[in-house]
Length: 407
Image (tube, rainbow, N blue to C red):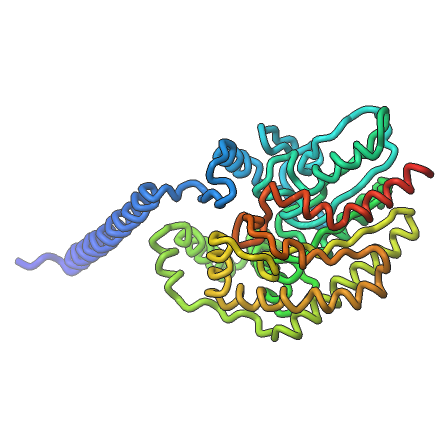
């Protein structure tokens, strides 16, 4: 006797659910196995931690490994109004120390309590001191020389406001925030170049911070998760849940591997000459504003266009040559390299008008040098190269500080 229709339907439904669950379960198990394979490979490759291959100049030093442990530990960022981000304050290590304001510590005397002069440094990671210990950064080398200039019983205070990825506009805003808060430096040094060019080529327009597209995505993410009550419809909520599930999947190495095989989005199209001119215009506009602030608030500005791996005239070491070859192999990096080589000549004439006597074009530094000056393909500098970099602007800095101390 056949089962009642209702029971027959229930049996078929249960069979369908069981079959579906078996398929889903098998699929999930397969994904777990594949993901496990990716994770095991990553572990065997030593890639669970951020890789820090030793630059050629640091192959025989005993501090590089510990430096990078501290570098990674100091990396957590916090939100900073107007500037986007900065390191969390109060990190203490052997080679890297972050003060209570989130700034890289610059070794220097702390007495007498009141300094005869105060110097601010603004810039990106090359100012902050990537691949350099505390006492070997550009601000630290400058501070050491300034203490000798100050003489017994006196001190010059140096503060490092550099932060990874910052462009000159972020330095300008950082200075404005300090002035707004009542702080009054005597001399302000802006050490820029690499990040301004990167940001222009990356976005296709000048004057934006680096990775602005990521900030846009983060803003959109926040708006999706923090919506006003009237936007909590079933449709919107389901979209958000689906979007969160997609983000969760992207955390899997196997999914990332597949996504990385997809064609990359086209780089914002901007020609080399256009990018160079646009970068110079934005940079010089910032310079004019700093000059105006200097007249209003009584400090002397110094602007340094940094030496870069992308435009260096030096004799490349094998390590540096490989780094340049890596840049040339990537279309966007190669375009940045070409822009770097055009900008310095444009700056000389523009800065002669915008900041007469306050500009140092250090892009031609290290001509004929055969040592390892650059520590990676980004263009960070080795510790032994720092004194030569400071030499380029030292006469300006020494003169400006000496005049302040006399007054």
